Amino acid sequence: MYIFFSDILLTAFVKLECKTEYHGVYGQQLILGCIVKPVVVDVTIITVTWKRMRAAAKADDNLLEYHKEKMDLTPGFKFAEPSWNKKNMNVSLLLTNTKMADKGEYECMVTTDVGIATATISLSVTAKYKTPTMSSIPETNIKENTDVTLFCNSTGGHQTGLIWWFDQFGSNWTRSAELVAKETDDGLFRLSSRLTVLKATSSSTNYTCKVLNVNGAKEGMASFVIKFVSRDLGTTKFIKSPKPVVTNFRVLGLQAVLQLLFFSLAWNFPRQRMHLMPNELFLAMESKVAHSCSQ
Image (cartoon, rainbow, N blue to C red; front, side, top):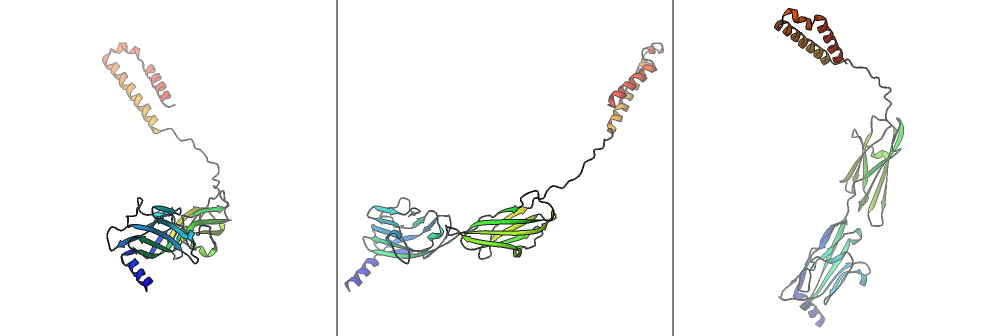
C-alpha cells in the first residue's frame, strides 16, 4: 500500500502535456512538443529522458538525457529550447533532420523535485519523390522509324509509387512501360521506368512522365524531346535580286537638278556666253552622274 500511495504522490503535483501524434517530413526539422505542468510554483527539473520505444529496450535507445546539470545527446536530437535549463518547463525534443528511421513510438520522462511525469508520442514520417530525370537510347541523331527507349527515374518517396507516361497528344502509354521500384538504404524508394517507342517518327517527339505517390497524387513531372537527325534540305539556290528602284529615282533627281542649273544659267547670262556650258557638256555630265549612281 505504501508504494501505491507513493506513486500517487509522485504524480499528483506534476503533469506532462504532449501531443500524442506527430507527422514528420523527411529531411526537415520536427519538434515533439512536451510541456511540464506542475501544480505548485518554483519547480526544479532533475532529470529529462527522451527515448525511442522498441521491442527490446536498450540504454542506447536514449536520444536525450539530462540529469543534474549533465547532458547526453544523440546527434540529430536536442532540446527545442536553445538555452534550456532546469527551470524551463518546455522539454520538447527537436529532430534536426528527420529520417525514415525516426518513425515509431517515443517516451518522455521528467523527474522534478515535486514528482515524476511520463508521456508517449507516436511519430510517422513521409517523403516526397523528387522531380524525375529523363533520357533515351539512342540519345541524338535518331533516324526515322527507329525504335527508341525512353527512361524516367525518380527517388525520395517513402512508399512505392507509380510512373505514368503520356505523349504530346495526351495519350496514356503507361501500359506499354516497365516499372521497377527499389528500397534504398535510407528507407526511401527509387522508381525506374522505361518505355520503348516502336518505329518512332518526328511527327511525335514529345513525351512526359509523371510520378505519383501511393495515393495517386502527383509529386513530380518531366518532359523529354526525342532528338531526331536534322533533315537534308538540299542545295539552296541564290537568285540575284534586281537593283533597288530607289536608284532610278536618284538618277532622275540628279538629272532634274542639272536641268534646273542649266536653265538658270541660260536665263541670267547672255546667250553669247552660253558657250561655257554647251548642250554637249550637259549631256556628258548627265551621263557620268547616272553611271556613277547606277553602281
